[in-house]
Amino acid sequence: MGAVCGKAARTDLCGGRGAILVPTATTRPGKPHTATGTTADLVYVSPKSGRAVSRSAGEPWRDKLLTLPAFLGATDPGAPSAAELRDGFALTGFFLARHVYEPRGEPLPDARHHFIAAVARHPS
Image 1 (tube, one colour):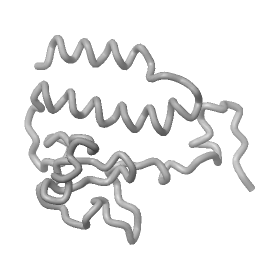
Image 2 (image 1 turned 90 degrees about the vertical axis):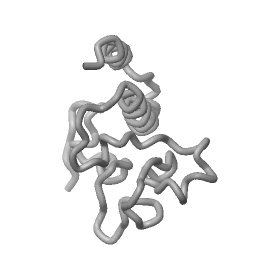
Image 3 (image 1 turned 90 degrees about the horizontal axis):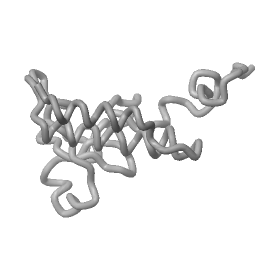
């Protein structure tokens, strides 16, 4: 039996498209969380698979890949730089747009743009 949901926007919680189908930085049993299987020097994310890509494997396609900010993969990241924050927002925005908003025919929310602008004005 499937769950019944009264909110169309929350079908991910009510038996709709499974959250596991949306690319994230988490692993799935039997599947590597990186495109090449390596966990060293991860600096890109594949927009197709959502998996991290190492510098050496991604270099030929770097103009087609998303940047993986260092603070997302570091064990002790410290405070992210303004550029890393920008890359992090670009990365999450890409997948939010593709998998959450575009399927519903909606743009990214204005509130997100305002939040990113506020963070850019006051990075520390």
